[in-house]
Structure formats: C-alpha cells, structure tokens
Length: 492
Ligand code: SF4
Image (cartoon, rainbow, N blue to C red; front, side, top):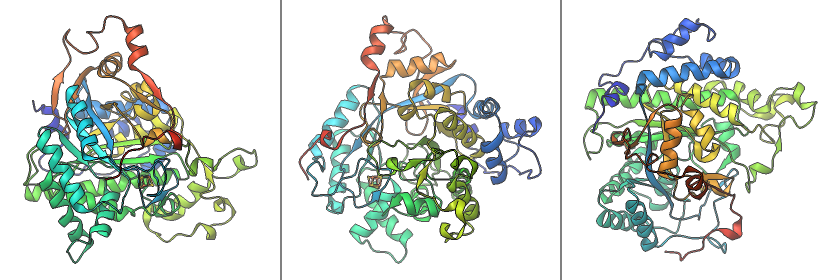
C-alpha cells in the first residue's frame, strides 16, 4: 500500500520555503509557520532553538511539524536485522568499541553461510530488510561483496539489502582502485556493481558529526564530510533512497549539530532539485530517476569500552563551569564550515581542552536535539526515534518530540552494544509502545510504504494476554560487550 502521506512528505516539485531571518524563535506565530512548513529555519535560528527554547515548547512544535507531514494516526516501525559482517577495520574511531585489527584473537569475518542463516532467521519472523555494515576490512576483495550479495538475493530475493555506509564506500575506492578520473566516478563504478549484485540502498552510518575539527579528532582514518555526502549523492543519482545519521553528545559544540543538519538539508535540496529535473525514482523499483534521503536518525554517543569514553566529563570541577565548553568555542570559530582549517590551539584558553572533555547527552538533550532536527530538516520525510540507545520509554517519548518512526525490532546489535547498553524488543512490545503513545502502530518497509496497519484485534500487541510475562521475556538490555565476549568466527 502506498499511503498519501508519502506524497505529502515529498512533493514532486521541490519548493524551498522562504526564510525569515529576523524572526525570533520565541515567537509563537513564527514557530507555527515553521511547523506548517511555510517557513524554513536559518542556521542561527536552529542554534537559538537548541540553546534556548524550553524543552516542552520544542516538543510541542516538533510534534506539530511531524503531524503536518505524517498525520495524527499512524507511527511506524520496521522489522529488520543488523548484520555486521566483519569487525576488522582499518580506521580507529575513538568512539568505537567494535573494531578489531586483523590479528586480534576476536577479529572475525562472517562466512556467507552464517550471514545467510541470519537472513533466514529474519525472514522467519516476517522481516523485510537487512542492515549490513562492517568495519573497513582491507582483506576483502570486491568479489567477496559481489558473491555475498548474489547469494543473499538468490536465497532471499524479497529481502531489501540496506548495506555499506559511505565510509565503507570510500575505503572500497582505496581497496579496489576502480577506474575513473574523479572520486565520484570511482564511487559510481563500485556502487553500480554492488547494486547489480543485489544492494538496494545505503544506510547513513558514519555520519557522526560532519564538522572537520571534530571529525579529525574522533574519526581517525574515517572519511571527511564531503566524501560522505558525495557517496550519498552518487547513491541518489542512481535512484536509491538513503538515510542520514548524527552521533552527538561528545566533544562537539551545539553549532556543530546544526551545521551537520544543515549539510544534510543542503544536499537534500540538491537531490530533490535534480529529481525535479530528471524524475524521482520510484520507491522499490530499480533504475531511473533520482533518490534522496528518506530519514534522519540521531543518537547520543555511548561511551563504555571506547577511548573517547575515558575522556573526562566537562564540568567535573566548579572552575570549569565558569568557562564555555571547548567544543562550543571551536564550533563557533569553525563558523558553519567557513574556516575548515580552524586550529583550536589559536583560539585562546577556553578552547585549550577541545577534544579532552566530553559533554555527554542525557534524555533531555537527546529529545531537544531530535525535536530541532524535525523542525530544521523540512525536506526530510522521516525522523527516527532512537530507542535502541535511549531505552524504550525515551524512544516512546521521542514520538512526541518529532519522530514518526520507531526504527527496528532489534534481533541483534553489535556496534552500539560494544560501547554501551542497548535494548532489544520484539514486535509486540514495539507496537504497544507506539499505541501507548497515542498512535496506531504500522509495519513499514524501507521506503516507508505501510505493510500492515495494526488497528484491529489481530495486532501483535493485542494478541498478548499476559503482559507482565511477555515484557519480562521479550524486553531485555544488552550489556556492553567486553573484548573477550565477542563472537569469534572463521575468516572468509
Ligand atoms: S566506527 Fe566503524 S569505521 Fe570507525 S573504527 Fe569503528 S568500525 Fe571502523
């Protein structure tokens, strides 16, 4: 079923709403116009919102914006499965507890058969998509990926393969040395082949924070923002629908979060403009037309077992609290990307601890950031609530702070759970969380088409007769993994 809501979210002719730079974000009339999609926030207004608008007000208007796009009735989820095919990675992101060197005793690369088994388990519970990402493993040739994709599609032709984030593609270009005179051409060469073999779309992993000063500190060996965005542009030009992500609540300043959202919004404008010129791709149909970002999902940094997590918290001493957070000082000097080579050592004593203090996010900061993302990203259809890291009840609250989608029933999670507690829920619990928030739960596919709207008595949550037992059995927390507890499997 293709709901009308899809069309209202992405009009066929892309029109950018006008800005009103002089308007105050405290002005209710202005906020109402933003919620109605009549006005677009400027970067300064986005930052002012994040910094100063009361949390309940942000929630109210983000919810109103969400209802303008998605209506009042239905909120969605997907049944998919994370498959992390290898943990061998040549990058050394300081926020990552998942990566291993090839020689580590617990390094792994899954065999095809292990991956196919996981896909089979997903299909058995009615799942429609796999989210397949790995470390950036220099030992795996292009043929390994092509063979894997063909094997998945041969055995499970209907499963949507949402695979390989932009940083993996950037490394594919380094590893495979494809033909082409520009980076974009090389990415296209690889992507076309992976697509022909069975890849359907790209996940938005590895976005983290786009600002160069932050990225250089936390994403050691990982691609820069322009490469990330270019990979996604190539995917859109091939008619694919993708997502964008942001991981915040570490060393970044608040302006970095808005800068990040702004880059997504700018490149989305470009993709939608080109779709207007060349035709929009048909969701679920391969080939022809332009794709775009379907969704934006953000979540706070999880610190356990990570080098970045050992960095001292900001505000541990009273003296520190009289100063500005170093990330804010550097973000302001970075000036929305206008000074890409900004060197924090030139910025005076308030910036001296940049990268050596973290400002972790709690539930309120998470909900505020998500609400601002809903209001700022006026050209992105879906905002996902991150219950996997925030827990089911904050995830549920996220549906009142601008999110329309609860993401996935979680069968398995390896990357975030290596760095902090994550939560696993089954479909009935996820449906109940959505219903308790005041909406009808609906299972969706990768393109946000509704597969099953659970309005009747046959809904997964309504078939449960004993919630106290079901909750205890089907909701659990996945504790941070220690190095020795990772599954070891044969290397391909
Ligand atoms: S976050 Fe990804 S790219 Fe970075 S070290 Fe971990 S596995 Fe590698």
